Length: 312
Image 1 (tube, rainbow, N blue to C red):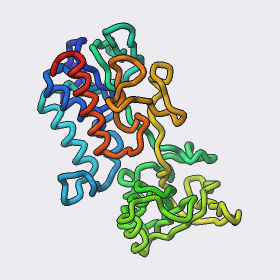
Image 2 (cartoon, rainbow, N blue to C red):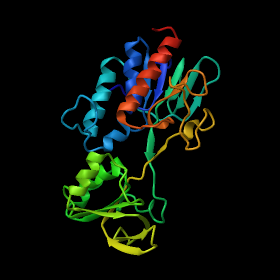
Image 3 (tube, helix red, strand yellow):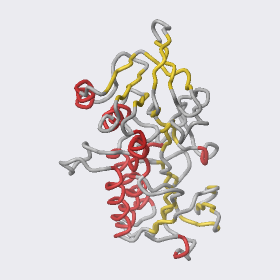
Image 4 (cartoon, rainbow, N blue to C red):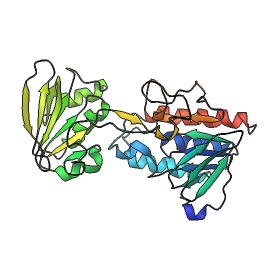
């Protein structure tokens, strides 16, 4: 890993913002094409996969790989080929003319192109006291915070793969896991849904939404059936929220074209509405947001850019 104080240069061929699977895949392909690449990351490498307990659907790993392990492999691979990984947040992006630049606390960095790979953050439920109780019962990462609830009853809200996998993970050491979903059937993959159905510790609370959190920490939650209006109080110590993600586009909302959902609009070669600015991974408008599609996006963007600047 190359930390900030080791990075003296300010000019690169390509700047990538975000060190998740999309950004790091872009870095791997770009440096292999002969480009001098800087990857900026404000937190840690890996993005959302760091909070994933197990991944069973990434090709090549017959036995499930943990999210943190896969994140480490992505980062190590990029570093092996010489990508500069700079742990700083970006405060501004400038795209006037052929030369692009980004500003950080340590100064301004320049490049011929920029790849946006900032990813997405978990969506909140948007109910009263949710934000206030983060870290005191409300959590968005089961693999990060689940161990604090060993032997206790908890709830997971959501119906997709993440929610179902979180419920299965928590069932390993929690006494009971309430899986709350606003619909009458899970949206998770069939293989995961069948595991949920077979797990006796998971109690399915379908056609329902959480409307209130009770207690100084969390002592219980109020759940409303969306079809009947019936209100139920469920005693839990923890509430894990897994209702989707929101793209991190605040930095570029006035720079590139966004879809109605707030994702960046690109063509099939990852080009945005601004020349030599590309978007990859979960931040981009597309059908499927998975690690494998993020990695593919990164590879495409890096290759397209390398061709455009005559490196390939």
